Amino acid sequence: MADPKNLEDVRALFARRKNELIAKYHACGAGVGRNDAGDYAIVIYLESAREGSEPVWIEGVPLKFEVTGPIRPLQH
Image 1 (cartoon, rainbow, N blue to C red):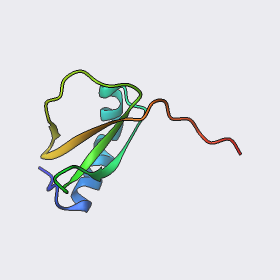
Image 2 (image 1 turned 90 degrees about the vertical axis):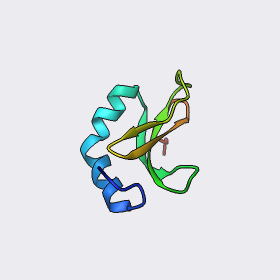
Image 3 (image 1 turned 45 degrees about the vertical axis):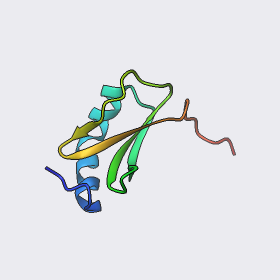
Image 4 (image 1 turned 120 degrees about the horizontal axis):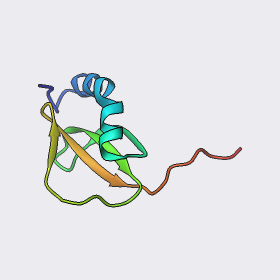
């Protein structure tokens, strides 16, 4: 289990599970951030709202879902 108050724990978990989480939630991106309680969380960026509103945790770390719409690279 990772400690959601320890940034290095959450970063290590994110590095191990990033691709799996993006695939599972059909996400357009993911990162490490904070949840409403102030703990570190893995943030899953979605193109549209997902079903259900129950909290989701992975190895003791909360997942936070944010709807961003599609993410595209900036044009220079």
